Image 1 (cartoon, rainbow, N blue to C red):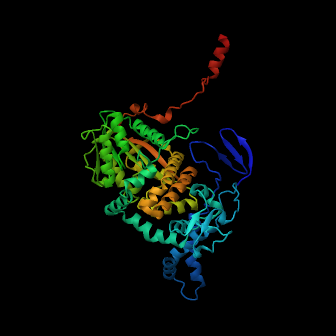
Image 2: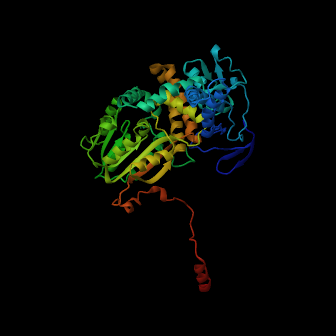
Image 3: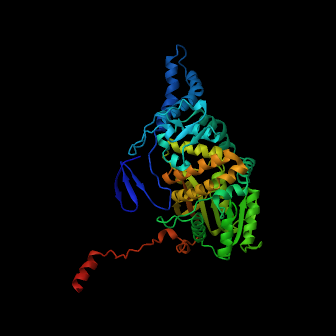
Amino acid sequence: MAEEKSTANGGETVAQGFRTTNYPAIANAPFPAEGSAAFSNYELAIAVFVGPWIIQKILPFGKSWYLYWFLFVLLGVPIAVGYWTIKSKFGSRINEKAKFPGKPLSNYITLKDESLKKYNETKKIPMQVFHDAYFAGKADFNGDVLEIMEWRHDWASFEFTPELFRYVFFNLIPDVIIHSQSQDEEQVRDHYDRGDDFYSWFLGPRMIYTSGVISDINKMETLEELQDNKLKMVCEKLDLKPTDKMLDIGCGWGTLATFAGKNYGADVTGVTLARNQTEFGNKRLRENGVSEDKGRILCMDYRDIPKSKGYFNKISCLEMAEHVGIKRYGTFLKEVYDLLDDDGLLVFQVAGIRTCWQFEDLNWGLFMNKYVFPGADASLPLGWVIKQLESANFEIKSVDVLGVHYSATIHRWYLNWISNKEKVLEKYGERWYRIWVYFLAYSVIASRQGSASVFQITAHKNLNAFHRIEGIPSHGNIHAHTNVEFKPVISHEELWENQILH
């Protein structure tokens, strides 16, 4: 561990070369090390285009362009794979402020399979190789999963392995290209219809599978408090009223729809592909006093929402658009645009990655796509999402980046999951428990350190006739709350007048 030097204000510790924190709201990072981001599109392009030319020069026959392009087609992918492999394995770190402790692997993990013995005490194991072995029971963490994962840079590497390349070429790319309605239905129902008990064992009684919101960094709010903070914030940003017709696309178990109907009196419609969620959500509405004529959860694909133009004046879509896919993203947003009244508001919350990624981020993202959220290929940087919204003729009213809030939320999910370990093992077995404990532990870290984040965007139609002045009371971002008693900044003339008067 890093040598502690001194203690600073705000619960912070200054360690050797880097700073740590101690806020109750989150699981604080004990070792915030940077990884490698040594990738260049220019270098890759040079390698792919120049490599065949060099081979052509070496060959004793043929100097034609036909031969060059033949070699380009033949060698382009292998050269690209080689470049990615070398850069991910040997690329330099962004910085080395956090020095690796250099402890042996056995301090962190136990490798039980003979095929893994080549990763000795001093040779780091590729993260993909480790997590696959862990899921299969061929490796174990020597202690709490989250605590060991915090020190992953000391025992794991983030190189691109043959298995990662295989998954990208034969699973991810075809999914991105095809992304059909039947594919969405199969993936969503396989995931979300696994069993409500499975999800309740980490989501808790609110059954909300999206980020909550921290209100006090000096307090460890409960999962329910974090989620209630978020529900209220979404409804306030929508400026909900009893006369509103609200649509929640990808409504999950219907908790936001229930909250909006119960507390704001709005007419609410939730849409989900999952049958279990539909049944659960409608039951939740009734149990909370929202009648059938005021609230309903519909089991249908978003493409099948009745296209009654402008029927809804408030629309929410929280962390569902990732499943829409890159291919249909623009079309989806145009459909949302048509469903929204010209005077309506949209709260659009979506998970995404950072633009300047590190190789660790890609390892984590591919794990998520393979094991947790298959088909969710539209988790992209904020700039891309904003461009898509504006291209659909939405105007952005506000953006809140909630990555660290997600980390706090997932940390509560993680604690719930490990507390229900025996129940999970009894019904779903060791493999599902291991996949999910790894997913939750790593996601606490990924969303805290910026590898992944979540963007909550408030938008409306970009029309001349939209009355933007009416949105100021619900524009929460511009209302700064402080205990400081401010004194106004005065001009030179005012200062001169004050001196004369006094």
